[in-house]
Length: 344
Length: 234
Image (cartoon, rainbow over all chains, first blue to last red; front, side, top):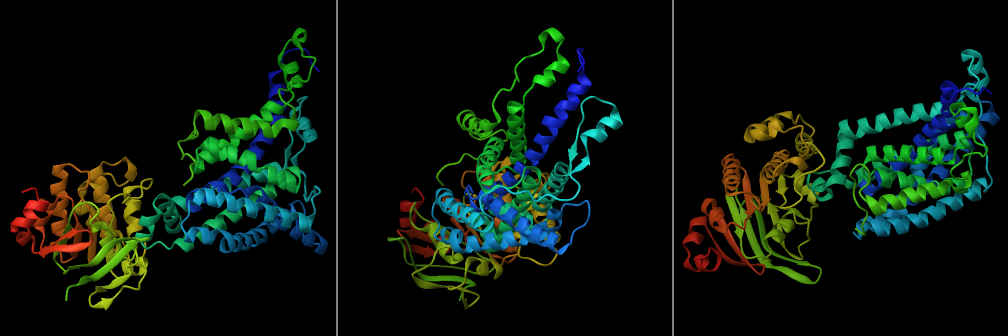
């Protein structure tokens, strides 16, 4: 290891251990946060079942992946999970529409205070969904990634650039970021430009006037669930490809996802995306051990002896929690001005 | 028989009775105005006519056909249009999107109707890309009015279209309403500014506690000493 200041290797190190992981984790959170935002804007409640719904979608992906690999129906180099996502989205859609029919629709019809009742109902759905996933797949962690693990590996990168520090781009990271960009672009196009998307925004803006304009509320709700199912399944599958699947882990994702939504401004899709990256970068930056990074940047006499890690990784959920509490205390409307959650 | 008739309407919010056998009607090419003190049930009449509140008795007829059992959406598709008093635009959508949403049910080309709205309200054309929430109260009222026109309705129901706007804008709105009436539409309007509204009304209803207290042509009501004394400030 050199004893002079080495900015390029320090940057390579940060890219490999902070920027790429945070970008892909942030993209996964962003998709989950967009699903929560859609439910909040259209159905008017904070969906506590989001994390477990992601586990449900991922469960279908895992089951289908196993089936496809068993049959030998794979394409070399491409994760089989990617091929089965469309079918998993359909499965999750059916599940969500069923839950809407069995649980949420009733409360919509009787016109109760939708947020607080919806939250309570969604907590019930959360437990049911989590239970179904554990019943079918069990509670233990699983990996379902196959195909090429890397777009380029540390070794290839080093050989190519001659740098001491390597950067690896995992297939899962590459897929996460690419798919997230495409999906977000599609979602914004859909909401901004299509007649159905506009009707959804109109319904969210002023429900009574939407009804007076002849917009069918049931159709708006159904399309919302379809979009939510797609976002949820894809977010879950990408997170699982990246970090492995564990029901408890997915359940806990609710906290960073809610933090993202609230930091960004509740009900604001752009805010949810910004919030997701703020949360992911905070988590990764605060739990990263900077020792090696500082050794690259500081003269020998100042090299640290400790790991220079601000917070242990086991406390990473506390970071979301602190962000959440801070925003609620200081700027409850979020960074991009959103709504303030109240009982209505 | 008038084009739109509400006959002997009885309605309540929960257990609180609001309307007691109240009747209103409006003919094509005419303007009917409902005035009366606060809490008289003026807006409730409109909600019942639109099917947003269920009447416990009485019937609503459109062009002779009983529509009492139809949903709000079905009544809209039959040609009723409503401009609510508050929350009458989609605030985070542009002016143009507001108009598009007004024409949501239409399958034909709505651009021609949008052009018509723009020619009626030139300021909306200038502001077509702006969000409705950024507009002034009067302009917002115009967006609301324009949105309702997008269904090409045969009956327009307006709930206090001049609430909270300046006197100049009020005159403008009234002249717009007369334009629409003259074009052959039936217009039913609830108004706080009773004097001005009755001045331009073909038919007037004074509602008190959910009952028809006085009914007549606009000028009859204005010249009725009792109505003047009680409702028009002498």
